[in-house]
Amino acid sequence: MTRPRYPHGVPCWLELVGADIAAATSFYGAVFGWEVDDGVARLDGRAVAGLGAAAATGHAPAGPARWATSIAVDDVDVAAAAVAAHGGTVRHGPVDVGDVARVAACTDPAGAGFGLWDAAGRIGAELVNAPGTWNWSDLATGDPDGAATFYGAVFGWRAVPLPAFGATMWQLPGYADHLDSLDPERAERHAADGVPPGFGDAIGWLVTAPDDDPPAWVVTFAVAATDAAVDRVVAAGGTVVDPPHDLGPTRLAVVEDPFGARFTVSHYRPG
Image 1 (cartoon, rainbow, N blue to C red):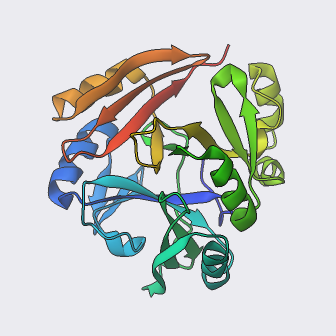
Image 2 (cartoon, rainbow, N blue to C red):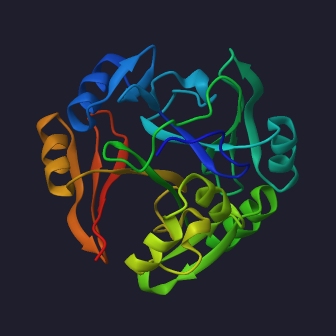
């Protein structure tokens, strides 16, 4: 779906940092069909992610390659102050990135990195939830209670446990109204598919990470067929971390690109 400017508190942009742009262009082109120009990956002519241009989020490329997620804010200076006031750290910025956005790179109190994105010339991802595009960013942390307190204070999120899914849904109250303005049939379609109540306000998931895993925001891409996507990952030089499996109506797998950045591929099959 194509979006106007994202509401405050909604994840809006993701970027691969710490990887060679030419090699990443080849890999993700083979896996998702992306075309890359000046560090911006596009599908059907619309921006879907950044590859290698760390300045777009302020995330330094040092360390292993990873996918970095940025969250839309109405005023990045105010949001950065809120991050610091509630125990997080502002590592870079706020700073203007050309006419693209005003950004800052932050970590939450547990150390998970994320960006702040005050859109100017680019709203963020222009196409999402379609095969080959961003689906979710989820926080994996060993301190879910602390995360709920921090992100609730900074962005107004609510952490709503969904035991049937083995995870907790991040909700931004009122987000469903925004989605309904873009897609008036959304609520009816979700009801027919049996999605959980309040799912229209969902902007991600909160999962408890193993004690030896560092806290991190992890990304999921939508695909037309999970098994076929995993085959393309392997053929392009990536590896399988968690093979394709079903979770309710979703078939998903965790993979790793040739540079060490992990991501999930997911196909939602309602009914």
